[in-house]
Amino acid sequence: MPRSKFPPIVKQPVHPVEAVKGRGMTWAMPHRFSLDEREAFDDGWGTEDQLVAEEHLPPATQIIEERVKSIISSNESPDIPFEHSVNPYRGCEHGCIYCYARPTHSYLNLSPGLDFETKIVAKVNAAERLVEELRKRSYVPSAINLGAATDCYQPVERKLGLTRAVLEVLARCEHPFTIVTKSSGVERDIDLIAPASQRSQAAVFVSITSLDSELSRIMEPRAAAPHRRLQTVRRLSEAGIPVGVNVAPIIPFINEPEIERIVDAACEAGAKSIHWTVVRLPWEVAPLFHQWLEQHFPQRAERVMARIRDMRHGKDYDADFASRMKGDGLWSALIRQRIEKARGRHGRESTRYELDSSRFRPPEPPGQGSLF
Image 1 (cartoon, helix red, strand yellow):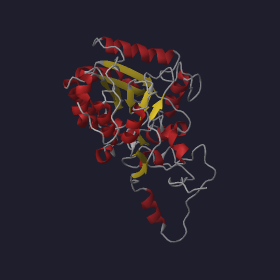
Image 2 (cartoon, one colour; image 1 turned 90 degrees about the vertical axis):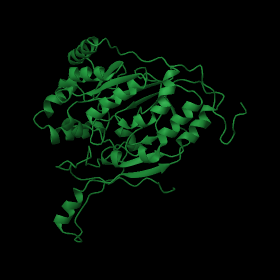
Image 3 (cartoon, rainbow, N blue to C red; image 1 turned 45 degrees about the vertical axis):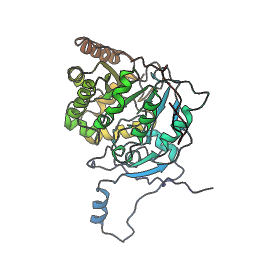
Image 4 (tube, rainbow, N blue to C red; image 1 turned 180 degrees about the vertical axis):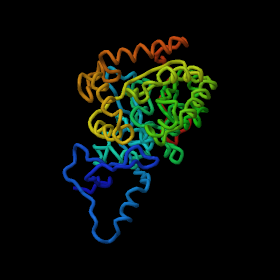
């Protein structure tokens, strides 16, 4: 069997007690496909103090380059408002503890915990594959979402520019797209997004989970600060780009008390629509989230989980399409009412933008110029 290019997962016997600055998780937790476990031990070559010091160094980010065979993912879930998506990266350096995409690292034999935010897989031929797939005779154009799984403007994008390359392809062939991000890096590409939005072919959704910079740093260590995200909403709006704000995910007793203030700030910054979801904890996200609560909010941990289970039919997570995004029951209904009243004061709705696919023309083969 050929040797995998992905490094083996290293599991820790116990959860680390202290958080590490700049990382959402410090535990390389076992994933559900693991066949064996590894435990750290002192082999006598270093003192205990040295070992402790090394364990508390901020883990460096590792970029794993991958050449993919396909880039457009199709979606048939009835609760997701797009059919196609492109994700230039796997894993996300933002380190959001609640990220529902964390379990996808398990398929790479990497930990959904620490590895997800430190071992970033970059699909270096994303733009090339996109051109090939858009040129297929069987391809039917429909708005492509960027950032559906992991943030397409996470820090490594500044160096690699994979998202920029994808947008250049979409812009050239006038293909509609949407972007979901919590990074101010999207401002770099206003020159591509604004002309597309004038053709009714682009919209951006910025996720804002809190206006409290301290809480944001705990929830999303390497994402843009709250005030920067609001500034991004304003700049995109001023450029004529339709901007929606996702108040997501809502976590009871953590950022849930801020719902009205977030909606007010988003609308004042120029958001045209307001959307929301409640936290979801599939697969390995649940134990990671439990540990995070005990680490940062020990006095509230039981109350938070009790409320989440109230909205999930008594479970940590319920995958039912009818309720997985917004939950169910009394508390979910109360959150919905608060969102609706808050955005109603500003005349905002949860409208999804209708984007124009009729102008799409397949991209030309690489190296072939147009005669007209």
